[in-house]
Amino acid sequence: MSHYHLAEINIAKMKGVDINDPIMKEFVDNLDAVNTLAEESEGFVWRLKDETDSYNATSLNPYNDEQIIINVSVWESIETLEHYMYKTFHSEFLRRRKEWFQKFGKAHTAMWWIAKGEIPTMEKAVEKLDYLQKNGPSELVFDLRNKYPAPNKNKIKAK
Image 1 (spheres, rainbow, N blue to C red):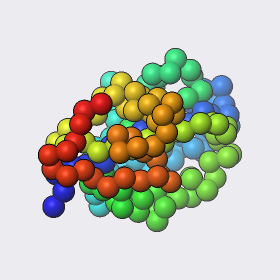
Image 2: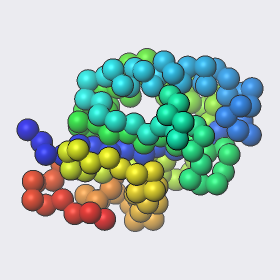
Image 3: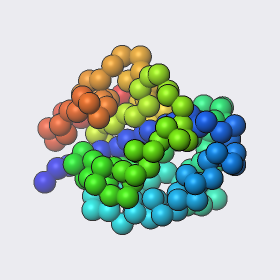
Image 4: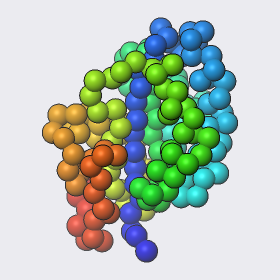
C-alpha cells in the first residue's frame, strides 16, 4: 500500500479569446460531464475548483492570460490517472484537443508525488510545472513520457 498519491497539473492555451468564445462551446458544454466522470473514476482523490465551488476551475487564472485554462487533480496512482485519461469518455476530448487548443510548445502537464492526505495548492502546482519546463523530468516532477515511481516512505522531499 502506497503512502503517496499522484498530484498533476495540466494547462492548455485555448484557440478562443477566452472560455466564452464560441469556438470553445462544445468543450465547455461537456466540462461538467468530464469532471463528473473524473470524480467517479477509480483512484480519483481530489480536483481544483474555483472559489465559488463551481464544477470547474476555468475562472482561475494563475498565468494572467485569459486563453490559458488550468486543471489540478490528485489520483491514487499513475495507472488510475492514465485509465481515466485514455480509457474513458475523456479520451474523446484528448483526441479532439486540436479543435479547441493551440500547440503549447513546452511542457503542459506535470506530475509529482505527495503524501497521502496532502492537497496541492494552485500555486504549488504552477511551481511544479515551471520547474519541469525549466529543468526537465526528475523524481521531483515528471511528465507522462518520463514517469517516476512513488518514493520510498521516508524519502519524499518537499520542493
